[in-house]
Length: 192
Image (tube, rainbow, N blue to C red; front, side, top):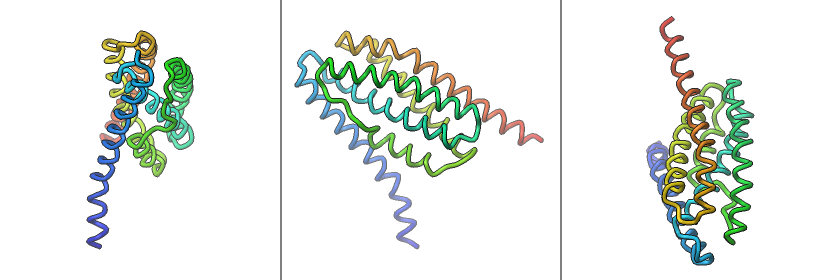
């Protein structure tokens, strides 16, 4: 029993370590990509890697929401993410080809942990966890795209960030509205 409790206590530490390891690996890969294409800075290459991983994750988690979402609004939100991020991912792949870099083909460890956690949930528990994850993820995405749109050095990568920032801001607002409606619905039910 002690081993089980100890294992459960160590799991978050190990998962956090995996996410940090993924970030270090992505930075190293971005530096290598920047060397292959000397006009692409390490920061721009890192943004492309992060944006690609995030886009892949949004599509996969959106599909999961379509399958497991309890609320029609959550399922529609998942459908919207699949549509919008599939298009953005295709544009990013074209940009990567143009810049002669190989983008990642997976969502990465951090997003995989979230996906795996969501995969084990159903119904309202899924909706709550999914929307919370989408709010947090889109807050990070908006910050990364704002930074690239403002500080990017490659005009094509910077333009990609500028073009897709409004979409991410809309996704964040929609997720926050869903999160707020779930909170107010819970409050209404608890006062009865």
